[in-house]
Image (cartoon, rainbow, N blue to C red; front, side):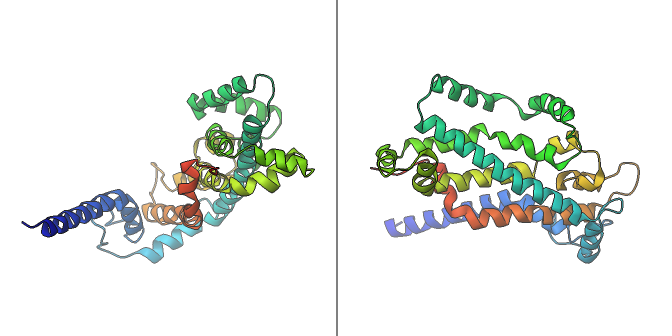
Length: 283
């Protein structure tokens, strides 16, 4: 076999393997979309198939949008959107300020406090729910959207770490030049540094948006009024072990619920690689 034919064969085998692996990875999503088109009666007769035996998409999506207990699904969707957008902005902004302080400002025990922040990444989020509940209960914020938003306003350890890596890659001469031009710390941050570290900010926004949107545990603990439920809690209500399970509506609304994440990712994905690379700028 010639070298040319061998390279061509290797290329063909590589692309076949890559396509097969890609199909395996995306199969759960394809199955979810296909299941939203199936009828409840035939959905699990051939559950591995992506082709519905009986098409019932209109009924599934209509029943899904009707919601649960007289509450339309768009109410849950709106709750999630408010909590996610506001929480994301607060989380990213707080993380940005903390990262700027740790990386550009010298203060006593700065490395110690940064190490403490990093250690919080080892603490499961579920452990923090009990003290958060006690604090929010004393503030009379339980069963309010504020209870779901406020904890995110204290930043995220991973996001702080991500931004610190970016800040450390930026020459401090830029700060000194800005100070000579009369810029204070806030002006230096927003006028000089933020445009440079924008990939890390957008990457942090993608992570924060996903974390808050898909959060199920905190809304489950903090919320009790159905009209204030977020999408993850609402989807759980489509399954009732004591009555009829609306799997069609569940899968249909699951498809709708992942659209914001996909759209948000597609819009900003070109910044994701730069953000993960943690390059900053090179001298």
